[in-house]
Length: 283
Image 1 (cartoon, helix red, strand yellow):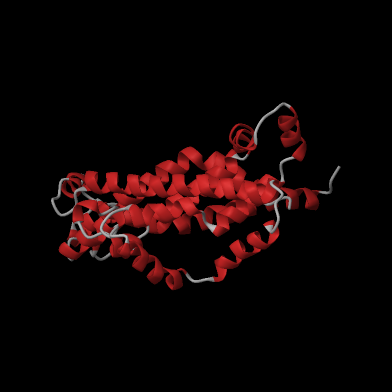
Image 2 (cartoon, rainbow, N blue to C red):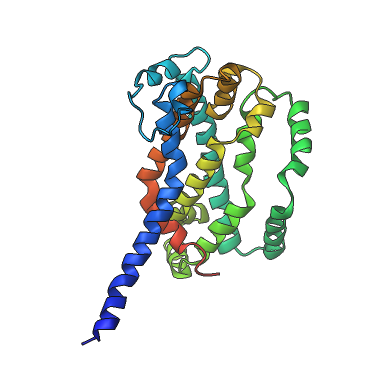
């Protein structure tokens, strides 16, 4: 039987850890709570002294005022964001999974050299390649639409290619060999056997890509010209420019822009956390 002092330590240690996690989580959630809190106030209440930690009265009409505003056509911007983020996510997941599988499971001359070059591109700042890419799409007369924003995703992402390769290396090679003995081709092995086994890794790639693309501001700002094509990130900026002093509705627009990501993460967190925990354990 453990001494009383040791028993107290064993009891207090997990309590202290959980208390620390609660404090950190509260600090991280505070900005989001303040955004929602401000979205349900009047403009005067937002800057009232002392600070109001709960809106009184709650301005529920701010939802309708923001969504129904001509300056912020939320439904249109939401559809554009889903199309934009969904296209980039699908392209990134498919291309990175295919290239990562090739680097991990296929044997061909120069494979390691090509992989090294791919990883080396991570050291190139994106702004360095932005101007040549823009000139290319301008020469192809594709500026003013979503093609320059979505098409590059189908050519892979070096970081996610590395991650997928590490995950594929953790799968026993006997599975591929058994499938080849049964007459399965390489594409069938990749599509029907390997992809289901790396579902957590695919979810990590999808969530990270969706998160980055959903909040991408610079790309749409440069390539899109028609306001009806704006995603939520650019639409919110345009709305803020027109309503510089309407902080309640600006906060409501910010909350509505962030809410879809929260919903997506709640439904995918199990696969996402599993992928984070098991990625790169081998190779």
